[in-house]
Image (cartoon, rainbow, N blue to C red; front, side, top):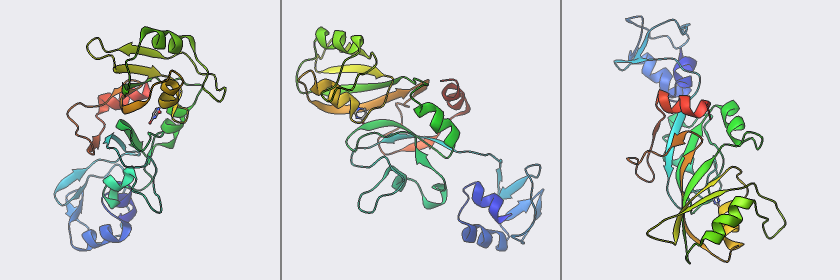
Length: 231
Ligand code: URA
């Protein structure tokens, strides 16, 4: 039972053992105080009055704030996982990396298979960003990105779509398929422009919830997970 509850991110093994001993856990309506009790996914389990449904994996949408690393841990700097309470962190990792100063959509999950598929270069998941630059973006930039450009170190890139904001030419939406190191910053640098703001808006079919403030996270809805699995 204690492993079952810990796997559902109710708390650490010792925390859930304590809850069980306190009589907070019921199986099929009966209080069970033995942490070693054998429970299966067919049982109805309640903890503190709330019914728990068994699931294999956890999927969270984070609106990444600036200043945090897209990593699980770091000796000196804060990571995106520091935004999650300890009892939820088990097995979680960000899917891909956003730069420390980039904000916006970051998927956090313990589903390694899905993460691998979404990041696989062969899979080509579109990622759309809102970008702000220090100088006006011009149609020639869009043409260059659409043709598939080379970075200063010779890296060839796949075509990318750039839509310049009609009201503010220093702002655009850019959609890329790869996720090379500092890719968008290097693309604009190759055009003589500096990126001064970058926010990821979507990844495959998954869109950043506009109601989610920077630094906040929530579980994906079933529909969102479905969209992502189909991406
Ligand atoms: N491209 C960048 O340059 N930085 C990011 O964080 C994501 C894409």
